[in-house]
Image: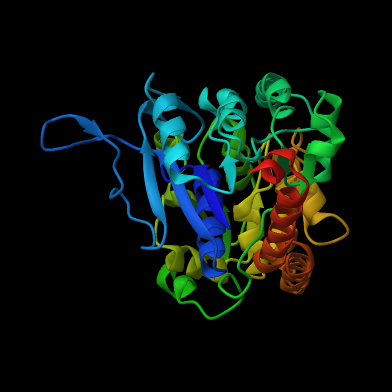
Length: 391
């Protein structure tokens, strides 16, 4: 089967990780994959714009197509006026059996159904912007508007893959037909992300490590974690390690420093290094106002780290029934002021939470098992799609 995957390769974000993990796994399972993504256009020898197949090369068996853009961020992308034509012609030439778009929050998302209908190829979307279905704030209000904006267009896709029942319920309330929605959660390579030895604590010369890993931005609510850390009396041998980049990085770094046992590591591209940090961590905290299904949270759980996360998006669902501690997004600072000292004083509780988190990932969020679901879904879609049957 030939899958044309439309997604992102940069800048680093959950969408990029999702696209990389799924397409690499599909290639490993023998699928033909073409990867279409937004990238700067190259110039040929005559100085004309051309499709760039070389930038950030994928595995040799994966063909790449670069879609031209004007602006690209972790959140959204603005394509050029030519991008729709480039996308259409590329799909016409590639002749895939199925198009799978990990939606990049760009205007192209809204014209994809029309393009694929014209080309007579089935179209699947993965829709995973963050959301909060229980607690209202500025960030959740903005994300709810995003869901309202997308819902009418999603109804025109052949199917929409989402990560949780909460997300399914939200989209159904906004008018997306139940029959179009398929819940296949995000997944982690549990062999790679696993408990194991690490020298990171020795490097820091510390005994307790609390980790946040993710974007440093308003919706991630890192400031509540930082304020709680400053206000509590943690042991002198405990350190808060912040991994990630974002618009609020410099602001927070100027206020919270190593004098308060806060260490800023910035974005870390080396996956082995990130795993080493997680394996040394005692506690992982995700204080977000809104989330989808946090891959960082799943990675920490898979490494056996005790996890605390807000009941935003699907994260509360992930940690339910003792797999971690669920925080109220409205009361994060106060709850962390209470919980972090308790966990520092009771390592047996930390160990138990880590074991339960790891077990939850093995049961529900293992990448291999979720890929099995995706394969079955592809086969079912192609068997029953009017477009596929008419080809």
